[in-house]
Length: 156
Length: 156
Length: 156
Length: 156
Image 1: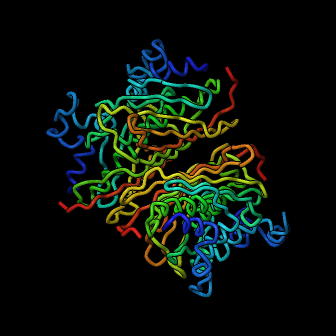
Image 2 (image 1 turned 135 degrees about the horizontal axis):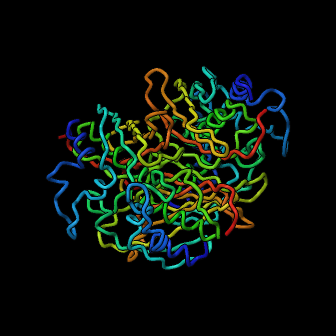
């Protein structure tokens, strides 16, 4: 993927065509990822690094009214995968491991920024770190790492 | 919580009353957790261990049409937290760390079972392991661990 | 490796010949692993599972006089790798990720058992869980997971 | 601890007195940590951040002649703990979780730098990230995270 396509993937869930294609039992094929990523804005994108931001939306809150740990982990997965696409590959591989440390609560309507940074993109294994910060203070909300296995592939 | 209440929490998202209570901007207060857990059935519940099952639903699929890694991590969070409630505490604490290894794909409509087992529930830190298996073969789909911090609390 | 060779590797650090071979700057080539594993006994070994035991030795203690977290992580690495050898491969691959949860202290001279179980050994990625328990009570001391990348290889 | 004491702890294992004190069965009380950290130099130390360097020593190699994964994890533990001391507390707490991603091999005599950065030091939980880089290229060798529980304590 070129960088513009990766940006579109993050902000629109892969484009109008794919995003709306129906799949099993009538659900759009990228329903879950769109559900998580809706409202995400890409502020910077370059090979190996993506900086994006998001206003914590009501749909992703936990019972304590702050960003749900499962939503944070889902964003580690999705934004972490997007960084691998910035290397021009046609697939971001399959997840091997995800871990997340939860450091602070991000409440509804708070602006957070999410920075994904490739630590290594080898021929078969890629590792990405993903950091969540409060936009107004820079305080770290969560720190995650995503390991993916890259099957043999041709570059696009 | 008593075991019956924990079961209800997993299967109904905390009961009709709470589940439907409106919160910030008109979203039900447990929208995300209900979105993830809808369809979960508790097969066994005892102190320190919960076994439940689920048919992989279309709404939690990734673009490859199998259970999304973010949904798996969300279930580690939610079912892992429920196990802490089986000790009769009134709060399951706040998440400190979650990690998940992804071992196999679970496709739409496959029956999976999720087993959460408390490794330690101390006065201040609790650690739970959560294993996802295919029901018909027993093959492991994912293996996760959830660490929570338990603030000082009175037992219910 | 056949199972007898894996057992010897764990209990003797790879045999007298290799274990004593000199390497860079005169250090035996498996000094670190022998330093960690000395005293380990294999109680059971089968494909995909190894159960071994150890008396916590003074050399692996932390300043609090219980098993050092770094020693525990080293054992996750070493015993976790040994399990991969039980599949008859000639290399256990390279480490991709290790994680460990510390649940209880194991004091000097306490007997612990270490159980390593392969969660998945695929063509390119292997994941192993490693659990440390007190032998007399069964109480879990630590729970770890080890992910390895297996380069293309011929079976021995 | 003040910063000078933390520096001494990393470079000398806690000072001549403690370092040589005999403990159970005649082993010095900080034998393991000295074994791992011997040769470590502190290049920068400030509240919440420590940068140190080390020439990969023969005693910490694996059978492939590069830094052993268990040694790396041990350094995540030790240097990660030292960062907590920079906040002036008298104990760095007990380990709750350690994870490490292995990204590249560091061969014998290579100069590596180890940067530990506190992500959060709260009243009861501290999380530290520890990055290992090759000094001459800046290439990341390993990336780890260390979570500790801080028991109630008075500041020194």
